[in-house]
Image (cartoon, rainbow, N blue to C red):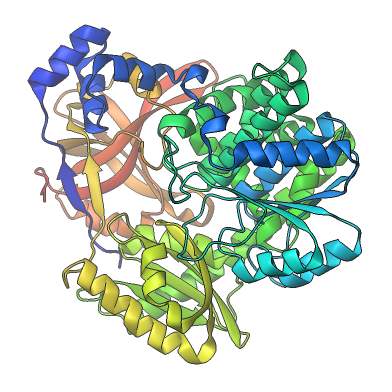
Length: 586
């Protein structure tokens, strides 16, 4: 069974919430939500809610950006062949597309794109790809979302006479590659104002600097300006998919990118929206990216066809875009089937091999697991069991692994502590990939679990559910929902608001719903108040637990607007529940 969640209720500050409420003329609940997110100053709160484009930092502040832009402009002017070399995930694919389109708009016709095959080449730069690109006549290589740990590959590029520009955002190591230019928000000795950009965000900053170079002005002309505004849709996709904090610049990118995605999508994005059947007559959210658009782009890279996603996003043919979007949709269905099978097998291993009362981390391997899908499964296992997870596809002698972790246990640092057991690794605090020799898997499991036990002080790392406020159901009005929507985009670093309501009566009989009957749907009311429909995703197996409270329960949930034809109602999206009338708080 899944680890029980510890409910952590924020201590309310009614006096500060009331002051912020009066200053901004917003509801006290919305004011408390802002306070819970560390936003207490009225002017700071206004910027947070509006997320103006003027809040983007000047690209010249990003280390290496101006030299990289100058070198690329010179390469284009000299007719040199340039290759944009991107990672195979959504962040790399969108950043690669963005940078290629910028160069193409500037008149560069000797520019191409390269996405490594996930299964055959693995993550990031590789020596054989560099040699192949050199044989094809490419002279300049620009990485997107990779390269900052590619020390050996940078030496090979130097030996081949390739000009190498690295743009990346992943965690740094002690030794940096000897590239011609490094563009990274965390370079030693520099102080970029916001270090948590995605790979697509870094690519956007380089594109912005390139637009200035080509226009020979700090203020870009209308053509490039329109391009940059439209490109925010791509940055939004990469930023949400890569699970970087949705704060500061990332919040601005996603907020305006969602508007661009809805109002002025490229042919490729329009085809993707159509195949997912998203209704663009209504506002899009970060959730639409995370659960519907990004998985289809990711499916191409996970199953070894990342370049097709780049082709889709840069397509100028409506029919070709539709064909590619349909293909990616089919690939996503294949990916989902593989994911479900691995998830079932992994849960079986966990229940059989681990004492969940004592285990601080989960490390599992299997020769039949698809290396392109284990990262998604690791995310689901992290959510279910509340522990750092490493999954390893061990078919080959050099096995491929993927991990996900909690904020209290930065994954890239933990893998750094295991570096002597690994062939390679890379990533950031929440997610990382690695390669390990099969003979070292057992040793990796032992050390990784020891590190997790030490980090969590030998206590099980049960999931923590942070709850913003305790509210009665009668407080759930459409006005409150409008205020919550002002906090969008929600995601990592700016999670969706979670409310607690106790003493609820279950009305009628709860039932399992959805494909495979995985979800739980039921109706609740508080006292003589109105009824609300509750949906608990992936909790159908907890039906008996829900009923064990004698018809009463407490819910931790996010209210959401449900529109169907001319009917509008408020539903409760359940994050967790406790049977009985009174909630147990940590």
